[in-house]
Image (cartoon, rainbow, N blue to C red; front, side, top):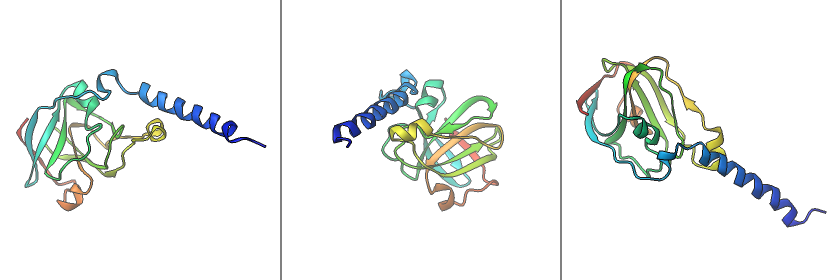
Length: 163
């Protein structure tokens, strides 16, 4: 008969290994340290948003990791140097997001709604990337439900006020 200790040892070892793998997959500059994001304003159709600007690789890697919430009038905009197929994932997120990819002209390329977070050790090892349908220059992350609440569609347009 298996004792309680004999049963818990393999489970504990597996949990430690999964946790270590998850931590090793984090880039070193994004581990729990505070990253300052410049702020700006954008509009999607006629909806204004205050945004955190992720315009460098360390900022894009960190993204919204470890933030507890994001009000409906705020978001994060990922700004890239040139159009491309930029995928995102929900590593160490605490809440679900809607993601909207925009091209150079601010036209919607792809919308992904209610993307769940990957915050436990097991979820981190299996966290999926979200890949857009086409090339984008900007990706806007907003709280889940924003797209439906504001009737954002493929015909919506991003206007940069200040970034």
